[in-house]
Amino acid sequence: MAARGSLARLLVIATIGIAAGLPAAPAGAVASDIQVVPTPALARQAALTAVSFSSAADGWAVGRVGESLAAPSDVDTLIEHWNGSSWTVSPTPAVDASDETLTGVVALSGTDAWAVGRQDRYGYNDDLPLLLHWDGSGWSPAQAPSARIPTAIAGSAADDVWAVGTGVFQHFDGVSWSVVAVPDSKAVISSVTVVSPTDAWAVGQKPVDKPGYDHTSHPYAAHWNGVAWRTVFVPHASTDARLASVSASSAGDVWAVGSAFDRRTGDHGTYAQHFDGTRWRQVDIPDQGASNGLTGVVAVSADAAYAVGHRDGQTSLGAVWRTVVQRWDGHSWTIMTSPNDTRSDNYLTSVSVVGSDMWAVGSDGGTLAVRAASG
Image 1 (spheres, one colour):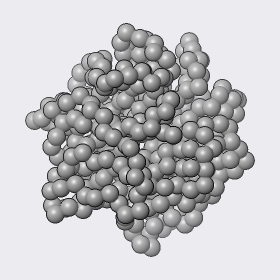
Image 2 (cartoon, one colour; image 1 turned 30 degrees about the vertical axis):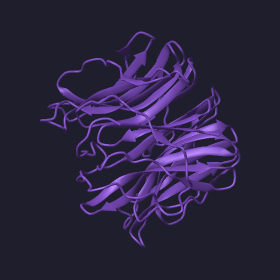
Image 3 (cartoon, helix red, strand yellow; image 1 turned 135 degrees about the horizontal axis):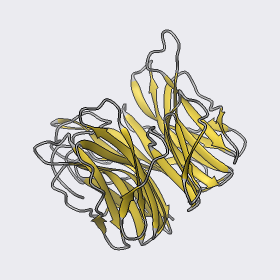
Image 4 (cartoon, rainbow, N blue to C red; image 1 turned 90 degrees about the vertical axis):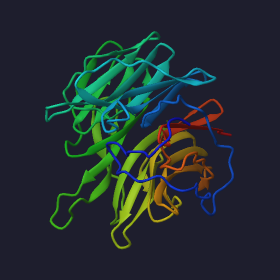
């Protein structure tokens, strides 16, 4: 739990006012021991967008924080570190005359982590990429190999790291970053997972460029085989569906989650796809209300995975977002009771499992971190 007050849904979501009270858990939710873990009180609007652990005593969460209460739409990078007992803010390199936000992080060891994001320079039309590296003593900027902006990062080892985004796929071999040919320049890439140097997945959405299909997208996936990235077919219905996150526990157990819009009903629902080593297939996953979506997933094993996101909630003062956590048990997805600790919007953006703990991060007006035993 961190700063209080109304939350400006910076960059990706619109402002919604403070609610009068905390709505009850959704019907059908399974009881859980998911608990809020205190995060630093920032006294400014903030949100965490990604989390990664190299061990139970070394975790990184990244996002954004308002520069001041007077100008909440002006944002700076935010990095918080878990040392096994508490979260603390880690200093980030100063960047002048711009708004900056971090959207992805990968923790490889106590002396090796990477973060990616974007820099919106005042007075310029084009944003710039942010690429930061942790060496065990501090975060420092690294030279990005392209002007394109990666939004997600993951790796299987210190010499096998991928940073991806729309129109950009970059690889770090332990010495330097290089640009790799993209599989589809029109695909909007949101997430990447790396199994090995010859096995990685990236997912997102592909806009449908047809008359009468305005703003419609289909789920998109691409696979790295050690030589090149190739587009892989993802089956989909007629709904507008997008993948926001991907995670693999092995070459034959890959989950991707996101949201789907049903034009017939006007509802936004949760959406999940699974790759079994041969093909992708859509898997049923519960909805919670008329407007909900998934933004993070972690695959632990064939019979364990977690997905997080948000759902709509209603109070006497109007609509707010509430957190969502769902668990895969090898047979089906089940909604778990998840905490909401402020009256403003609460949502989760990213999830990770380390040891016996499941961690998820997001926002409750300030930064939000929750934890539960993953067994």
